[in-house]
Image 1 (cartoon, rainbow, N blue to C red):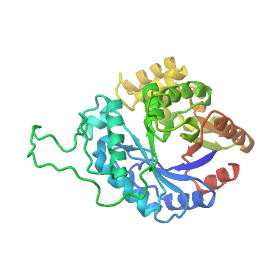
Image 2 (image 1 turned 30 degrees about the vertical axis):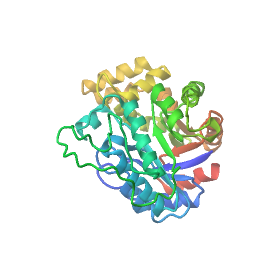
Image 3 (image 1 turned 60 degrees about the horizontal axis):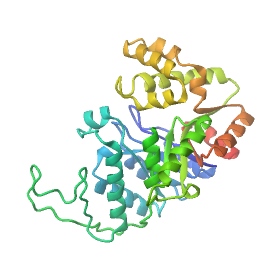
Length: 345
């Protein structure tokens, strides 16, 4: 089991103690540090800025949103960070949701699986640098078709000026649904799992295996990384800790995404919490947030987190490892907790 520090995306401002957390992670044997983006801070700038003070940990995005940049642009970001870090970059990408994709980036959300497949292939072509990058796909055509709206017909196929440090720079996919997880198993080097539960490990493995059985699949299961974002809390007051996570859980289930298309809610429905999810969503939609928070069952929160005293946490980490998780991406926000977790793994 490896540990990753998930810094995530910023709220109203930067994470004030991020340099302290990262230093503690590197000193404590963490394997990687990750940043993310939503519709505020971007994923790459903080990663490069804070990562410049590191020498050993891998530096990853979890996730960079594919609608934020053309694939060639994202490949430029990735090869740049990889050079600056001496080959320590992990490129984690994801599709986000239709509200963000269409509302913030002004891009169509349709066919997310096909877009992801094509996007990853263009990135790999850039990193391979075997010749000018050409893509005939419908989502990211290169060069831009001469008969397309606004085209000058002067587009030229290019290959990157900078020679990528690694053609096999790892690409991990953020995925929640069965088809997207299978796609990760087929075309990626790792799966960025959110709301993972060891209870459904066999189901996840089936979906990954489906992707890995396809012609041309990139990795075997032994070569593939499963990195699960998880809240880990070492405490004797489990009840209070669980309660503290209910507001953000209610928000992601009831307030994140559209009423009829919330990927996070679907994850919990597949876990067997459909009735609770429906109630939370309905209350949230009516503006009854306090009641929505109160409707979050304890077991729903505990399902996807690790909480308890030191020995309980140690035992749970082993359980997650036995379920197939190769990295726990923890959202620790104190250097003391980072160090304590480093001692447990």
